[in-house]
Image 1: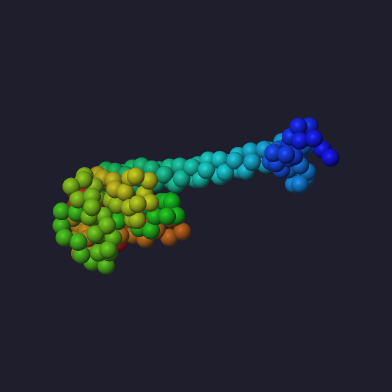
Image 2: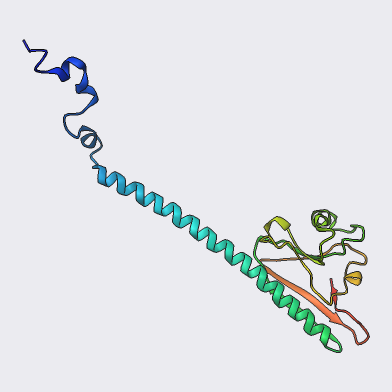
Amino acid sequence: MRNKRGDSRQYFGVDRVIPKSKRSQETLGIGFGVIFSIILIVFFIVIAGIVIKSFLDTKSCAELGIFTDRFGSEVKKTWNSQSFKGQFKGILPGNIDYVCFANLTRTIRGPFEEEGYDIGLYEGKRANTFFYPTNKACEMPYIQINHLDIERISGSKNPNCIPVIDGRIVIELEKGLNDRLVNIDI
């Protein structure tokens, strides 16, 4: 017969709560250090995924910025010439579907009405060129390209949109000898 005083762990049921040895590690067959290392590896993989996604988003925004600079420069070069007819080829992020030219002070009409109502939110802004869908345009859904004949471009269709195919766009620029501004032939 055992003495209750001598084996108090059994008497109070502590034997089940506090293991005599590292029974939990024996059950899994993995030590605490290994479990902690696995948790750290998973943590670092998740952080690496977040960082890579951030770099890819930055790349898309940089492509959009480069496009706006190059297109603006090409329009200015065309405007400075006596007459010109040619193509501007640009690269845009894959999530942009259209580049639209619109005069938001006039009524929206034509085959791109849905896009027009979306970009109509920017009425009152100094802008004539819009990226659609606007929510995927890196916080710059509209820009102002100087020297564009926006009245002529958006004469029959407002907005007048050019599709982006596989991240590439071709814009036909033209300026006649007597033209004051650059037209886009869509």
